[in-house]
Length: 198
Length: 242
Image (tube, rainbow over all chains, first blue to last red; front, side, top):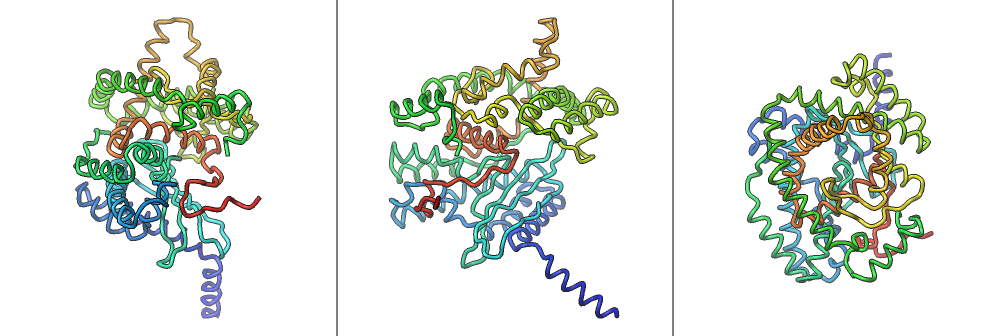
């Protein structure tokens, strides 16, 4: 009888298992919150968060989205350079945001998708100290390497497409190489982030 | 998507301006806007931000949070009104319950006891109400002191003002004091956000503009905007089948 119940439980679990992208976001978020709670040194916390999170990101896709229609005219070399520089910028911004807002808990909303879906958005709400919760949504798509995040939307603002306006203007004024140069300068000037007491 | 249903006036203004400058079609007044943005940033750097930093330094976090709660509680009146105008009866009821309970048991709104109880803020303003009624953004505009907005959202400010509580208090001196205090409180809440934006942005002006427009679309759809067909995405060249 016990065995039968166990088996039934297992089956129920299988049937109710959340879709992979939802589980991915939930597990990653939980680990990030744990890191932020345990590691009080901001720099170390940032390194650990990066090690945990970055493998799930598809930076090539992110850069293509941010650059927009000019991406098609970019040479392979320009694409590599743009991706490298944009990755640095995104990683710095994303990890600064996480360590600034000591996230306390992440509520991942159940995702309703059919099995054939290859592109989904997982909605989450992050509880932060002394403030209203912040919504952080992740867009993921299925790639040959599994599900990868290609957009992070914080309080409605995409960390990726919000650069498109600036990128467009820069490419129109000084070409794709001008954009690479601008990103390089930004990355070299951006050192440690000075945050205000909160 | 928003572009498909703006009022005729805004739509034609948008098209004309787009043709005239060849810049960002949502920002036909860019040169004026940039000048106003510089003015606002200067004022912020030399006056408002330092005051907000001092405020943060002097007042302990729980006190600041309490004061922030009081201002948010007063805004519930506007939330009730706008939720009703948008036909969101349940959200209006939430806002009403928040106002009642937080004003009484939360001691004049100092404590937000409704959020932990599962009744979050249902923030709505008249700009969002106009959007729900089918009015498009209109051109982007940077307002003096108030910052990023659109023609539609600026038009909404007046109506929200009438739904304010202390905004309609008789004494001018009291009102000015209230505005100053609220501005410093709001600015102090945003210190970290603006530091992050400075860190992230290559051109803070266009970053703020695009962020504002994205954020507005997000709140108009109550946090779950529909996916938009993205003609600039290099990987989806075909338009969606209709």
